[in-house]
Length: 215
Image (tube, rainbow, N blue to C red; front, side, top):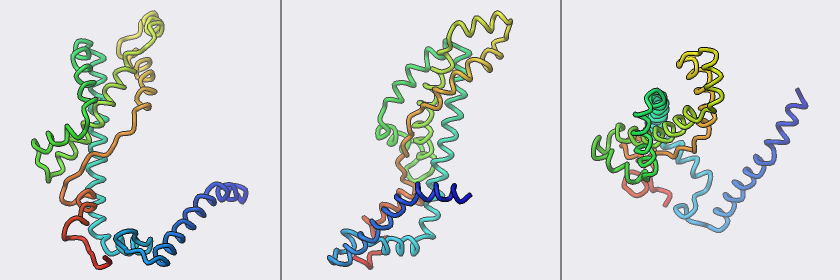
């Protein structure tokens, strides 16, 4: 047990030490050179502001987290479900996959105004739609590739055992698609414009709501 704790300390000790020293130097430089708070705030000032505004930040974090998590789950489930469907109906796959590739290549800044116009800029539905779109198309494209890119010998072997299409799908295609699904690129966060989310809170310094006593 002590050996395990010593091993963890040897791994976590250096970065924690460097971080602590960096924060101390940061605090000392700001205090020593009299740097104004709005140019470079002290770490202690940041902690104080977080504590003072925590009730507002807590609701904003919850709102943003709900948008991100719900959009992520819906996008994954919808992408996987449609990939399963297009694998069963190849005509549908031939029609939808090129369209999905085109939409996936579209910058998010071009999609966000469309969803804002459809669902409103202050609601959560437009933000969730952006997250769903960002997640759905990569999931659909990669999962479809994995379900289709099965070696013909594996299909022939299963057919020789008189396996049904469902058995082939479950035992061959789905396991083959898992590496493609896990190789999905990181999904970036969608722009947020809700009145209660973190994006709104982070834009407060440009308005009149932020506490400016320290400036």
